Each structure stands twice: as structure tokens, then as C-alpha cells.
Length: 356
Ligand code: SF4
Picture 1 (cartoon, helix red, strand yellow):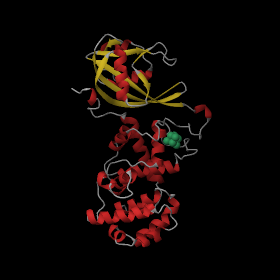
Picture 2 (spheres, helix red, strand yellow; picture 1 turned 45 degrees about the vertical axis):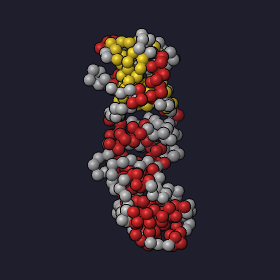
Picture 3 (tube, rainbow, N blue to C red; picture 1 turned 135 degrees about the vertical axis):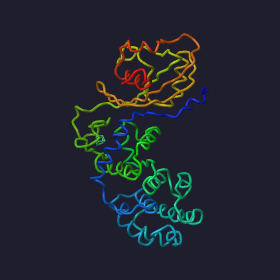
Picture 4 (cartoon, rainbow, N blue to C red; picture 1 turned 90 degrees about the horizontal axis):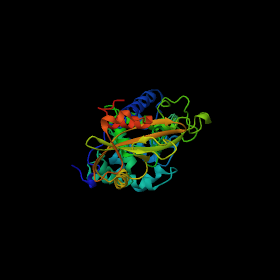
């Protein structure tokens, strides 16, 4: 059994399969027709992807194309780049700006030559140790260069995910990244990753995203919110979380105090901010229980009144210390008139007993 310090001992599973798988398959189909023709996509190599991504990290795609072609012509592989002089590398970089990138590329090529026999490493930790290789470029080399099933999220990708799932683009939860990565079909990591990027560059653009013809619009939390459809469709976005706390067959309910679900019995819920573990400790103090195992079971989007919410659901095994709170036998929950958001949470937490 897990102690309080091991609240996350069970790995997350079932993160709302449908929207994630749908997201990936729709984008793959879209990419088949709309992929941009770019020189680093004609023949995929980890080296070519690395150079392209470093150039793209501070520069527009259209500007990078000619620089990339010239650079690859002169330095077609790690060995030729590593053995070049610094001046030569700078010369080919001239006009591209942010020269630190060229310096780091050159140094990293030398490290790869000396420590990895000229082969760009195929693991995240080694890649991150190379000069100038941050989390995104390391992931892009793995995903696009090596076609490994990881997700590389740059600004375009973060924006698409944030809008589609109703998240903050600064804090895309790791569960979302992992779940999407697990939905990548065998051998299609580079296509999925580039599909997300191109989609962000061409459809889900920073300003005036093209929501009307967007193939993701049906499931997108932000559809129409960013300006391309009428104001009447705007909804307020919220990230919520719901906890199903249980001990043996008893489940905790609380009476909703706010206007939204006024006077209804619901499962403990709140805005999804901060650490769920801390939230659970606070609930434990309020209802006199010790949380023993916090298990993330999934998420869903839900629309009501003016809101469109992204709800994460947790199932929490607790040890009760007193009589605080309203504890109801699990088998009797079907008699309670839950708002549909909480009904969905219940089905997600106890799928065998409460099928959707
Ligand atoms: S519906 Fe609009 S906001 Fe949502 S993914 Fe499509 S373009 Fe982006």
C-alpha cells in the first residue's frame, strides 16, 4: 500500500482515449494533403533534422530554406562540420543571426565526433548534454530524425494542444504529452510531429485561427474562441479537477456551495491549479481522512452554460479517521442527481460499475 509520500505510485492510465486518438488521426490525414515541402523533409536524417531545427529555433521557415541548403552542401554530415574551422561555420551562418547557435552546433558536432563516433545519440539524456540542445531540439531529433515515438512541442505545437485541450500553453501536463505519444501509430512519429507543427503554422495560427474549416473543430475546446467565428460562440475556458474519494464501498460527496451547482451533492472539485497532492491533503484535513493513493484516471472536455471545461479526474483511496463529510455507498450513487459533468467523472473513475 502506498503511503502519503507515494501518492503517485500508480502510473496514470486512460486519459480520455477518444479525443487523443482522434486528434492524432485527424492531423495525420490533414498532413497527407497539406504538408509543406521543405528541404529537410526530402530525406530524413538525424543530422539534417538537427541543423534545420537549430536554424528554425529563432528564424522563420522561409528564411531558413536557403541557409539550410547551403549549409548541408558544405557540411553534409557531422564529420565535415566537426572538422571545419569556426570562421567557416560562421561564414555560412552570416545573416541568420543568433550566432551562439552556430557556435554550439560546431562544438556539439565535435563532441559527437569524439564521444559518439560521429553518430548523433539516440537518447534524450545524451542529446541534452550536447551544447545548444534543449528539450525541444532533443525531442525533435528523436521524433523526426529517428522516428521514435516521442512528442516534440515547439511554439506551434504548444498552441495547437493548448487550444484543442483547453490548457495553458506554458503548462501542457505531462500526462497529455505521454498520452498523445502513446497514440502515435507505429513508424509515424515524424509525421505526427510535423503534422502538429504545420497545423499550427497553417490552420491554428497565432492570430485568427481558421476554425471554420478546421478538421479538429468538433472536439476543440477553443473552437471559435480566438476570433475566426462569431462572438456568440465564445465560451469561457476552465480547467477543473474532480476527486472520487473512497474507502471500501463508501464514496465522499460534498454539497456544492457555489452558484453553478447550487445545493447539489457532487464529488469534491475545484479549479485545476497547483499540485493535486496538496489539494488532497487539504481535503483530508477538511473531511478527516488520510489519502493513501491518488490515481489519475482520465480527463474529458465538457460544455455547460458559458463554459467549456477540461476536467481531470482522480480516484483517491483514503483511510477515514472520523465521521466528517457525507459518505455514500458506491452502489447508491446512481440515485443521486449529479450534474452531467460529475456523472462523467463517476463513469471514468468506476467504469465497471458506472458505464458511460
Ligand atoms: S478549431 Fe480553431 S482553435 Fe481549435 S484547433 Fe482548429 S483552428 Fe485551432
